[in-house]
Amino acid sequence: MTLHESVSGSISHLLKFQREDGRFEGELSANTFPTCAYALVQMTLGRPVDDDLVRWFVESQNEKGYWGLDASGDSDSEATLFAELVLKEIQRTDYRDDIGAALVKAPKLPLNLWIVKIMYARCGHISWDSLTPPAFLSAVMRVGEWLMPLLPKSLLSRFKPPDQYAPPVRLFYSAVFESLFVAEKYTLVPLLLIMETHTQKRMNVVADLANWVLENRCDDGSWFKVGLITAVSLMSLLDAKAFGYENPDLESAIQDGDDWLQGLRASSGGCREAINLNVWDTALSVISLDAVGADKYRPQMELAASWLLENQNDDGGWAFSDHPGGKLPSDADDTALATLALLKAGVDVGNDAVRKSLRWLKEYQAEDGGWGTYVPGAGDVSCVSITSHVIEACLAVNELQEEDADSLLGEVNKAVGWLKTAISSSGCWDDLWLARNTYGTALAITALVKTGHADCDEVRRGIRWLEQVQNPDGGWGEDMKGNIGPSTVEQTAWSTYALLLADAENPAAGKGVEYLLGHQNPDGSWPASCVGIYWEVIGGYIDPTYPSVFSLMALSRASSS
Image 1 (cartoon, rainbow, N blue to C red):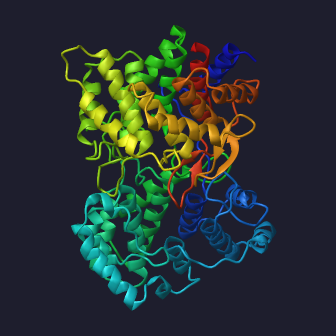
Image 2 (cartoon, rainbow, N blue to C red):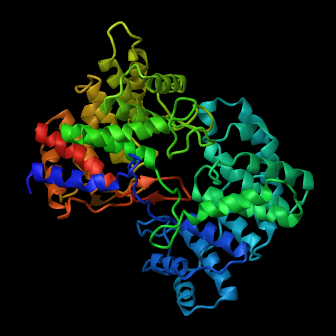
Image 3 (cartoon, helix red, strand yellow):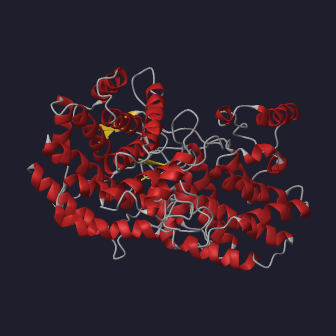
């Protein structure tokens, strides 16, 4: 297959993901933690667990008897323990031979992670006392809570309580709570509420926690548009209701949350961690179509740009999913990519939406020069890929605007300085959101080359690192922990693009192109892999748009070299 044929087939496949309203959206794969939490919610509501859900649990168990966090098929002890709990609960009322066989096959593992232990305690399998730290450790934790507000914000994310013990409910009332990463807050409060309704049972505390949960719903009925958080929040409200908590919004919140959870089901029978990542999918699709340079796809790009404009948050940023004006916060990665996509689709640099997004990005640049996911210092840290995407958006703005307009050169130079310091001793950049060192390294090289630093030592080291970890088949691959593994199309594509950008004649890049051409399916698609990363207890995800958008970038670069 020639480069032209490959690109043409890939575009045809990518356009299948565009909806009538202009957005691009792929179905994400299911994950174990949100699937388990969903099942417990259904049982709490008195509903039988359906056959498709049971089938997902049975088919997701690997040969070693474990469940993984995600669709990668790896083994994870905490995911296995959570899945075992759910299957045991199903067996209480509906014994099934396939569940029995799965439980026999599962390994015997010790409980450790406090989030899973809470679920075991809630179902009556262990004592709530097992979540309480010993007196000495509790005293140490109190001292730590007192010290944390006095520490620099850059250090706060490094201080975590022991995994096996639940944080004390008093944390909700402390200054430490305000310093937590936004997703940590949304996860912590409902878990504290569950504990409070089963342990100390103080109505005033139950009311405070439950009120916070109710007040922080999204308009669509979810919490943070995230599966695990929404399911745990529903569990907490159901427990609060059973405890005697009353609120005029309680019943509607439970109903709306349950309705949202039903839409979380994937075709596999399990539950996704998020219904979609359509802002990211749409922005990346527009950017990759622009890289092809074919005017005949301009209508699709403009339609997608219109959808992005309609789904900009009031503060000027974009969230990861379409929820304008709601309680889903803007993040720097989606804001940067959406801004870049608008410019690529022909939206004027002086457009009010672009100006608002640039103000948002400028406001949330961290002191170190990078950009994190949300608000600098609030449990957040600067991220290589996000910083690189913001740099690209700023460069596009600088290129398009009038010479006497306000330049973003200062922000870019500061970000470049941070990127150079973020390289590891081994020569790679670690990233937070996609797998992992290949993504961070590819994005850092891309940003540094595009800002005129192609000859810097950091770029040379990054190129050497990519060359060294390339697999014999010409591709790149690693798991969510950064361990080198089998090649994937996505990781090969972004690594190849970066190498081609730095040196069109790079032999490793040539092998990467050959890998991509050799693994494309007849319909223009590529096999999708679990390369997207959430956080520790969620794992990764498969997004079927990723192979197309990243491969289009790489192959378009190869064809223009």
